[in-house]
Amino acid sequence: MSKRNNRRGFTLIELLVVIAIIALLIGILLPALGQARGTARSIVCRSNTRSIGQFQTVYAIDNSEYLSAATTNLAPYKWQNITGALDPEELIFNTTSTSPTTSLDWLSPIMGDAVNLSPNRAERTAQLFNDWGCAGATSYNDTVYPVGKPDDFDEFDLIAQTVGIKQVSYLAPTSMYFLHPSKGFQHDGNGGFRFGWTDGTNPAEKPTEYLARLDRVGVQPSGKVMFADGTRFMSTNVGLDFDPDPNPNFFSSFYANNPTIEGSTAYGRNPFTASVRTPDNQILSFRHPNSSINITYMDGHVDGVNQDEAYSDPNPWWPSGSVWNGTDATEEAKAFMEEQKGNRDVAKIY
Image (cartoon, rainbow, N blue to C red; front, side, top):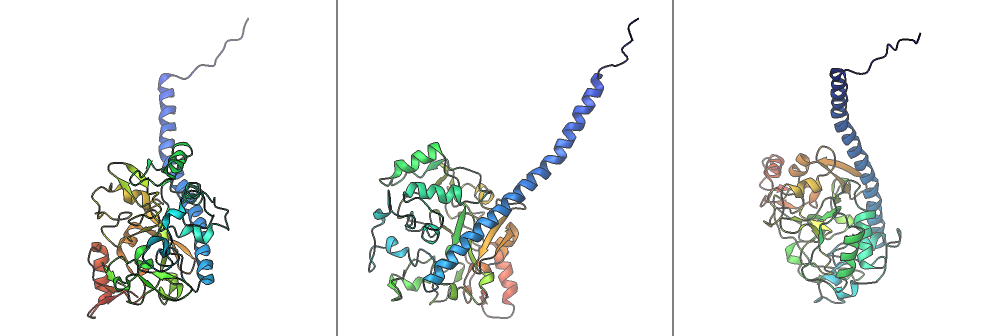
């Protein structure tokens, strides 16, 4: 006699219970896995930004404390009406690994040789965004900004269409790198460094004699921002893009108004330009866990700051001695500085 088979299959109810349990476990685990992945990306980003900060510091030490900036080594490309000016058109196609990709690119001059950036401008731009960008900057540009196409535009477009060019990762605050409006176009007589571009006086006015130098940022460089996570521009009409113009009109891919300015294109809730997509601009910039950004400070250390903190405290974003007036500032920053002001006539950045 054959043995009776006592095994039986799952009933439909048992199968549904198992599926429900698996779905429940996935629902519990996925957020934790996503958080872990976000944390890992933030750690990689911090390592990356620390290296870039070290490159900037070494550059400054080798150049009389001047930071690589639009108002120092890049100024000859930006303004052709100053002594020793250079034609921005000289930057297109093939140059050198340390040539700025635009008149605002402070990154290439400080790290081009050290990390073997390409001498080709389009390839070098892609390296800055892709290879040296933030690990948490995972979006790709929808297009290369098509207005005022430079002669090498097709090279940018080809890379964007084939390899892809990621979103802008790191932005230097104009409040730390640009100067007092009274400076105009001048030459400082020190090693050929020039300055002249300002970001106005809102919502704080920098000291009249401020220069973009390590020894001028403030009494505690550890509390002053060198650069931070941030994506410059996402528009309602063309999506995420970047400007390949060798001499951009505005802050382009390398600078931004800081988060305590309500109209900041990268961080603000009410950007100055109506075509900016909000809150997408904030999501792209505050891209790490708990809506935070990684900030590299002037002493080289890196720390994370959440969105609420970034909107509240203006002190890290302006040089010491700047006078606060609050125009165009976030409500959080106005309240913070009013409390800091106390019984004094004016509130000053410490």
